[in-house]
Amino acid sequence: MNVKNFNWKSVLDVCAGTLLVIGGLNWGLIGLFQVDLVAAICGGLDFGETNALSRLIYSLFGAAAGYAVYYVVSLERVEKHWSIRKQETPKTTA
Image: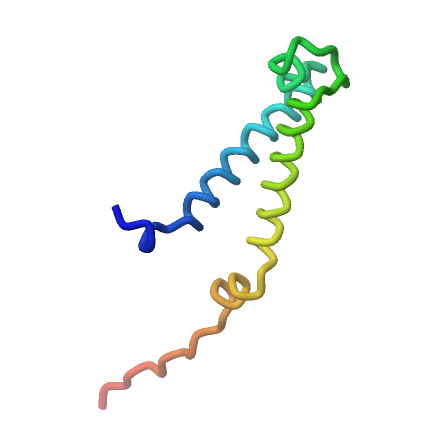
């Protein structure tokens, strides 16, 4: 595999999407059951407690969300998805 031709953006998209899903599931658990899965995994912390590892994980969730906002709002994507294409005039048969 040639590193120059490797699509790093698609890897970043997949990583950000994965982090958003995991973070969203964690917030769902917090909202429904008051269970913070990240805190539990990072050393059996109680709800609301943090350590260096849990703060790193939460920071990655935040970075993924920031990337998603950029991705959605970027002018290039807006122009690409919302551009008005020229309408073809219907062909009339004489």
